[in-house]
Length: 68
Image 1 (tube, rainbow, N blue to C red):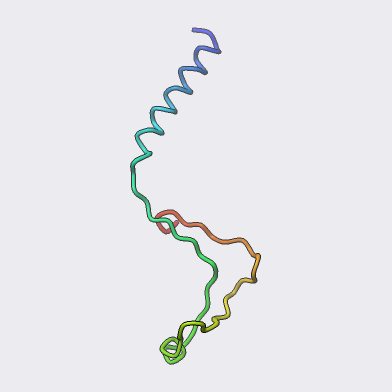
Image 2 (tube, rainbow, N blue to C red):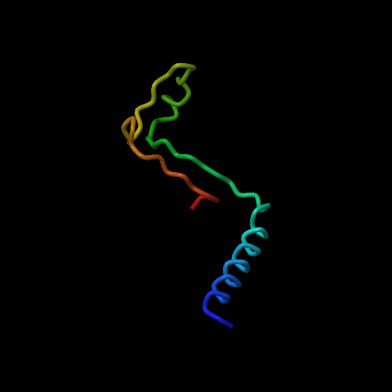
């Protein structure tokens, strides 16, 4: 088997393996930022409330798959 044939076979095997994974459900979480607040402040939140986070606008987001 030539090197090119081996690469082609390996590529096809990887593609088949990926197809098996395509239909697996995962939990996707996008984290904008974090903060700590008291229960009192949490209960006072209303529509339009502003919560200061540990990141600035324009900072990168964290994207987690299955919480990792």
